[in-house]
Image (cartoon, rainbow, N blue to C red; front, side, top):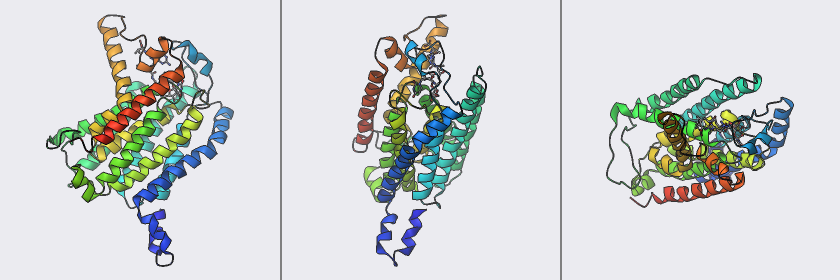
Length: 358
Ligand code: 57M
């Protein structure tokens, strides 16, 4: 919205600065962080008053039992900060911004129903896995169809490190895009099992996509770096910057010992956001690199459940997702989280490096 101040630059030349995506990205990150930082304490008190406390399962690591009753659904505040900051700093005539915001909020809505049902009915397990999956597929399919129906949009893939190979998936791009968005959403959801464990890598992923969205929307730089040029993608850098700032602000309260959990409303939305950004700017495989922690957590569950069923009860990991395996080995929760953050930072650096390594 603040972009339109550039129309008044004849009155005050300083307004011209709102034309720059870099300036507005910094503004979006700072705004989202400040909203989180200022509203966090009151929101946590409200969740406590409403008794929106976490129900901790008794089959998890014993160290989690003390977390019973920690306020949850902190994702609601994250989404409010993300939306307010994006609408304030991004161009509102950019349909890609509205598309990503819509799918993020829709995924938050799915998670919110799940969270509320778990809270409202003590023994309720929330939305059925099938119901959650159907809604996620519908949300992702809307993004995929919108892009596929755009004549300017290509169904070719761009692969990190492989400069001249762009396989064209044709119609198969639709299920591929749905798989990326739904997979990212569920992977972040599975990862959100320790204080700060999901929000840290999400923040790093958002930061990497600020860079890639800016470059994808810059015709000269996209050509020079041999990445797909996507008209209007630059404004998505502002959304990613707001996502980064919102995650940073949430981490202030979710750091160990967490004062609040994000809930499915947050984890599903975070995954849906980064998944849809990856599809829109055609950097799908980059997500598998920078989001490697999420991929590792999801794969650990697939391996554990598959092996458990195949061997009628045996386990490969002490407990899945992977972060619980280390907890069971005696690592303190904070050690697991900080080491997963370190892995995420290294993967983020590798992801940025793919711009030149091709
Ligand atoms: C999402 N939710 C956390 C919190 C957060 C198939 C199976 C792998 C599914 C998986 C599962 O239930 N995943 C659901 C993980 C939960 O966190 C809540 O959920 C939201 C995210 N969706 O925002 O509201 C618990 O995680 C802890 N937590 C923190 N700090 C945070 O900042 O400490 C969360 C956020 C919270 C809190 O204790 O209660 C969760 O873990 O459920 N199941 C599992 O992950 C379970 N693994 C498992 O059963 N493994 C089996 C098989 C199925 C693979 C095995 O290894 O044999 C583990 N989780 C739990 N109990 N709760 C272990 C058992």
